Amino acid sequence: MKVEQIYTGCLAEAAYYVHSNGEAVIIDPLRETAPYLERAKNDNVQIKYIFLTHFHADFVSGQVDLAKATGATIVFGPTAKADYEFHEAKDGEVFKVGNLDLHWLHTPGHTLESSTILLKDEEGKDNCIFTGDTLFIGDVGRPDLAVKQGKLTAKDLAGLLFDSLREKIMTLSDDITVYPGHGAGSACGKKMSKETFDRLGNQKANNYALRADMTKDEFIEEVLTGLSTPPQYFPKNVMMNKGVNNTIDSIIESGARYLDLDEFRSRAEDGALMLDVRNQSDFVKGHIPGSIFIGLDGGFAPWVGALILDIKQELILITPEGREEEAVTRLSRIGYDNSNGVLKGGVKTWVEAGNSIDTIETIAPKDFEKKAEVEKLEIMDVRKENEYNSEHLLGALNEPLDTINSNMEKIDKDKTYYIHCAGGYRSVIFESILKSRGYHNFVDVLGGFGEIKEATDMPMTAFVCPSTL
Image 1 (cartoon, helix red, strand yellow):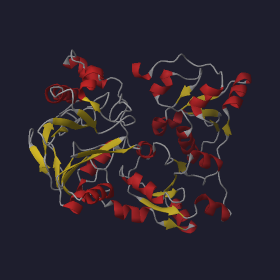
Image 2 (cartoon, helix red, strand yellow; image 1 turned 90 degrees about the horizontal axis):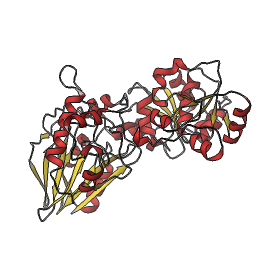
Image 3 (tube, one colour; image 1 turned 120 degrees about the vertical axis):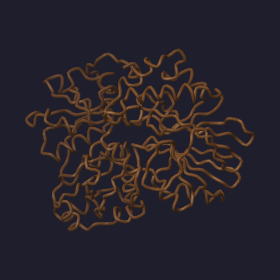
Image 4 (cartoon, helix red, strand yellow; image 1 turned 45 degrees about the vertical axis):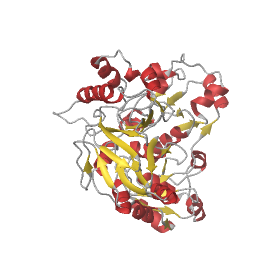
């Protein structure tokens, strides 16, 4: 028996590859099929099933293409409906993979079809559970994503989740391993641990939502308190996961092809969005006017999904050399399939043709401190609200990056803002969006709040642990 967790850090997502005696199952696969096909080929096993714990909201899953490539059966939980053929599992149904038995546990709450898979090993002993978004390490799945107006409220779903956890999961042995669908950084929960698996007994003891003496009403209140607004692309990904989409190979073929300067410029003039995915330091030093920055070396896909409102927006890319296909692949994972080429030679091609570039003014934390001592500065903190509430510079205004599309009117074009995030990635995204919309009076504080705290004595609020907020 082999159980492998395949973790994708950018999405904080875990897929699973399980095989025994020549047969395999893939649980919650990403869109690209190659990682699973290669593993099965190397191990000389046949992929028999593709299990989906639920219809995912934060990424486009690859079950349809993987089933076409392998002949495997797609399996969803009770009540699921989709535009392609799949097997609707019954609560308690057993699926055999080699010498293993995988028991389907219907655990609604995150969504109505949400399910957990219990794996029994070759000796028939409970070994582990694949919990999808029902149970995370340190948290549980948010119950506000599958609300149906007039039919189902977040409180209704939270009540179902309470019952699922108590009746289906907490009754299992403390010794089994919990393999969740996500880790820290995912917007599918609020208090997820950086650990990506754990013993169930540890979760019973330490996960706030599994407290033994918790009433249903207490659970509903606690699990619904402090939820941020879900990213706008979530419902769009759910709809894609219920349908049949373009293959990732065709998307990469179109999206990663090179554009000469004339075609690149023409597409931009026709409304394509110029997306620069290089490192933020390169973007700051010089970028094509009107382009926006969301770098590959950060939380790339989730920020694209949060900030580019039209999932069908045509994108033309400026990438580091050799990372063209990576950029298109990571965009397609969240359903941004309309990439239409990469500027060959990047910013260098643009400059060599005699075009001007734009830059972002920066300031080092020490110089920022000295300037703040002699004049009143407009300081803007673009971290999330809970980060800001945990600790921030005195007098700083909080304008979280994820709300920039709805709060742009709050920013005064005539004022000069000194902008920072935690480490310098998000602030440059924020500033690039400002520049693309005609705002130019701002300065980026290099290294963000972390460097300000380390290198200066600027006055700050008292620290409050984010987990207590």
